[in-house]
Amino acid sequence: MKKQGNWDPARVFFALGRIGYNPVSALLDIVDNSISAGADLVNIELALERVKVNHGNKVQITSFSIVDNGRGMDETGIDNALALGSSPEGYEATTLSKFGLGLKSAAASLGKRLTIITRSANSSAYQAVLDHDLLDKKYEYEFEQASAESIALLDKHVGKGHPGTLVCIDKIHVNSMPRADDIVEDLKRRAGTIFLDFLNGQVQGGKKLTLNVQGEPISPRDPLFRGEIAKGENGNLDDTNWDGVTVKWIERPRKIQLNSENTITATVAATQLPHPPSVAAAGGNQAEARDKYGIGAKNYGVYIYRNGRLISWADTFDGLVTQDQDLYSFRAVLEIDKHADDILNIDVTKSQLHLSEIARTQLAQIIGEAKKKSLEAWRHRKSVINKLTGNEPHQQANEEINRAAQSDAREEELELSTLPDSDRKEIERRKQQENTQKKANQEEQQRLEKKAERVQFVHSLPNNMLWERTRHPSLGDIVRVNQSHRFFIELVDLMPRKAELIKVLDILFFGLAKGESKVIYSPENKAEVVEKVLSEYREQVGNALSELIRKIETSRLTEQSE
Image (cartoon, rainbow, N blue to C red; front, side):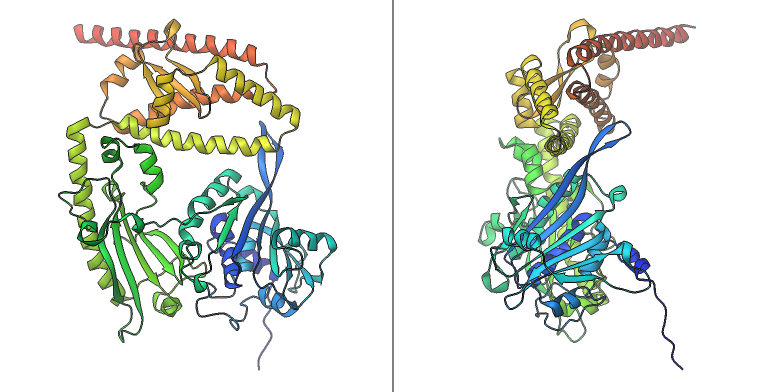
C-alpha cells in the first residue's frame, strides 16, 4: 500500500531560502535564468526607502528587480519556472541551470513575495505572484493576464511588445539583509568576473551580454588578467628575476582528467599578478594596483567556471591553496562543463564542488608547483622592496581604511537620495562649508590621491590636540595626527614595526574624525555649536592624555628608583 506524504509548502520555501545564498549570489543566480533564456540585456535594480531606527535613519531595500530581453514565457513556461524541480526539457547543453530550484530558492532567500511579468514572442503578457504568506497546505500562486501598468513596466526595459521577463522580489527579509551599498558594490565587483565569458561574447554564438546594476554597465573582469600577459616565453614567470609589476603565466592552460575513462576533462591555468609595493617603487600607485588586481585575503585561489559561468570564487580546495599573505597575487582557474557535475558533486547553489580522487591528485601536483613558484616570486620582490624602502605598516592600514571610507561615502550617497529635498540641500551646504573651512592643504590632498592616506602624521597641531579632521574637496575626510604629542612620542613611535597595533591606532584616529563629520552633517544638530564643542573636546582629550602619560611615566620612574 502506498500513501500520499504530507508537506508544508510554506516551510519548504522557508528552507529553500536558506540553502546557502547571500543576496549577491541569489541575484546572479536569477540572472543565470535570463542568460539561459537567450537574453543579451539584463538589468538589476534595487528600490530603496529611508526608515527610522532607534538612533536616527537608515536606507532600507524594498524590492529587487531583474529584467531581461530573453525569450520570455507563455503560461506553460511560467508553470515550469515555478515548479519545484522544474523540467530540464528545453535546456541547452550550455545551460547554467541544474536542479530546477534556482529561481524559487534564490528569490526565497531575498524576500517572501516573487512576482513574474513576462511575454514571449507568441503569447500575451502574463503575471504570476508567489506569496509565501498565502501558502498553506497547498502550493498555489496567482496567475493572470498582466495589467496595463505591468506591461508598461516591462516595455520600459525591453521595448514595446518585445519578449522579455521581469522578476521582482519584495517583502524583503530586512533583518538579515546587508547594507544596500554593500550589495550594489559587491554586485559590481563580482558580476564582471562571474559572467566574464558572456560579457566578452565567448559563448552563445558570440553574442555579448550587457548587464547593468543600478543603471551602471558591468565590464568583463578576468581574475587572471590574461590579457596583460606578454606573448611567448616573455610571459612566463621567472620567480627569481620578476619585476613585480607585470602579470605572468605560472601555468599555461592545460587539460586534466576528471574520470577514469578520460572522457571528461577540465582546463587548468595559473597566473601571478603584480606585487603592489613593487608597482609603487616603479612610480605607480600602490593603492590603485591593489584595487585593480584585487590583491587581498579573499581573492587568491582557484576560480571555477562551469559552462562559462563562475561558480566558485577563489576556492582553496580544502587546503590545496594555503592561507598565506605571500600568495595574495596567486590566481588559478579551473574550467568545466555540465558533464562534470555528477563527478564533482556540485551543490544546489552551484557554488561548491568536491573533487574526484583523480582530479584532486592531478590538481594537487599542478597547484602545489604553481603555488611554490608564486610564493618564491612574491617573497623575492618583498625582499627587494624592503631593502629599498623599509617596511611601512602604516601605508597598508591606510589603504584598508581608504577602501572602507569609499564604501561609507557610497552608502551616504544612497541615503542622500532618499532624503527630503530640504534635508539633502542642508547636508550638501554643510559639506561645502566643511570643504571651505576644513580644506586640506595641497600636500595632504596629494597624499590621499596618490597613496590613499586618510590618516596623516603632521609635525604639530594647535592647543596640544592629538588629532584634527580636515577634508579633501572631492574624496572626503582626512585626519591629521600630531607627531609632537606626548601620546604619539611615548606610544606610537615606540612600535614602528608592530603592524597590527599601528593599524588599530590608525583606524581609531580616522573613526574619531569620521564620527565628528557625521554629527556635523546631521540636519538635526546646529553645526556651529557642534563644531565649537568638538574643538574643545579635542583639546581636552589631548591635554588629558598628555597628563595621564606623564603621570604613568613619573610613577614608573619612581618605582624603579625605589
